[in-house]
Length: 174
Image 1 (cartoon, rainbow, N blue to C red):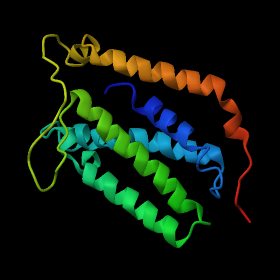
Image 2 (cartoon, one colour; image 1 turned 180 degrees about the horizontal axis):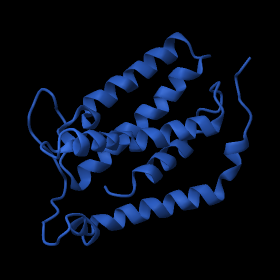
Image 3 (cartoon, rainbow, N blue to C red; image 1 turned 90 degrees about the horizontal axis):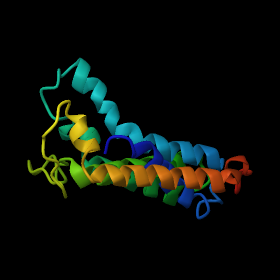
């Protein structure tokens, strides 16, 4: 995925707002946490370019390990079991779901090490053949890019039709 991580985090979060309406957090904060989680794994690009000099595929970093996101999700669920009235576990829940969705979407046409750090094996559903330069042109010319455009369309539709959640009151707060 090149351009669809932010809108995919938005779509996921927007659908979870109704089931989480009793959370002690304003809907906009839950939405932002999901969007941030949707793009957070790619913050490793800063390390990739400025420290590592592109020596290691950035999907090999811990931010792209499904295990990290599953652990964060587990931590959020434990936090919710212990203290449902605090906003932090709710925010972590949305953030970790966004990050897990990011890794899942990257698995479509990019290599993801699903069993890292235990198994050094990459997985991808589709292989994008390198034919063009620069490298990103290969992804734009591939049919997978249509999936990204569809996600953007879905997010724009959700934004347009459902703007009213963002101004909703905090539920369950004392």
